[in-house]
Amino acid sequence: MDMHPLLKTFYTKWVEPTGFSGPGYEFRMEQTQRLIPAWNHVVTVLAKEAADKAKNPSDEYRKQEAFWGYAGEGPQMSMKQMATQVLSVSIPQQEKYIDLQRMRSRHIWDEVKHGQLHADCMLRGGFIKDETEMMDIHDANAQPLLSYFGLTSMFPYTHPLGRAAQHYFFEGSACLMIAVMLENTDDELIRHENYSQRDEELMHFMEGKYQIDAYALTPEDQKPIVEALDYMLMPGGPSIAPE
Image 1 (cartoon, helix red, strand yellow):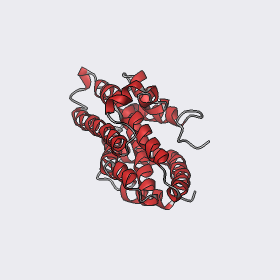
Image 2 (cartoon, rainbow, N blue to C red):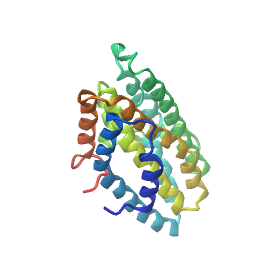
Image 3 (cartoon, one colour):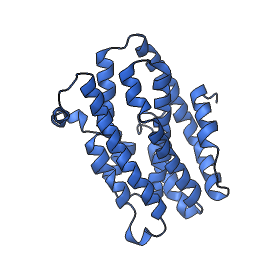
Image 4 (cartoon, rainbow, N blue to C red):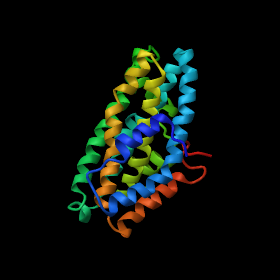
């Protein structure tokens, strides 16, 4: 299929290069072919929407961008749901996955920072006077995307490498979404919100990439990754998947 230029750049610069060789890398690249249509869908659809909205930026647009960002990365998700990702590593697995746990701990802090960033945009835009106002709004503290953050909270026992599949697919999508927004808007508030997250979302993608390349070396280790991607790609699952 023809890749959108932003996806092609992302693929060439961040997906293909690796310091690994062998079964983990080969397996990841094989699974990546399943994800390209979904990633391409993300870029294509959002690029059109962002270009249309950029023609007539409005306070309502700025507010919604910050509001839904807060719903996805506010305290409910960042401090509660993301914590289960560290807990997914059982005591007997500690030694094997010590590097993975360090990455997850950093990831949790990044998400907390992102939630604060979205609140900052709500404050700067004059949409709220204090962040505590968000606590009384249900939609600011709920995550409807079951195949990622819902999966995180509902199934804390998900295999650690199933989490790596989540990060690889969805954080890759986040990198592409940010690239689309930065290319299609000059609005200072929206650029602040996206530019500040760009490198951290890339780190989260690279976290999943590294863990698959390093740990998914046997059919047994690869199985939870395939199962997680099956779930995330199923019809009616993630809202970003192609119909």
